[in-house]
Image (cartoon, rainbow, N blue to C red; front, side, top):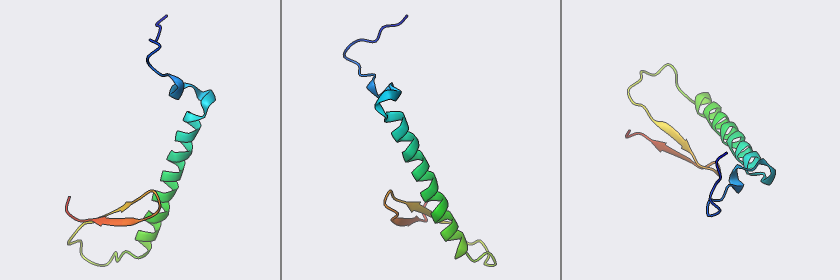
Length: 71
């Protein structure tokens, strides 16, 4: 058995402290936010226009949208 030095905190690995549950909720929220804004962007997208440029919508944690075109 490997022992962990007392100077290293393993509390973030302990499921009883809720850290794992918090990460799961955060991941779920990020997924839903991304899905919602993808749907919004696709609804206003002009599929008949020729593809002459590409941009990406970056969604912040509070729903703010930034567009990036130079990547």
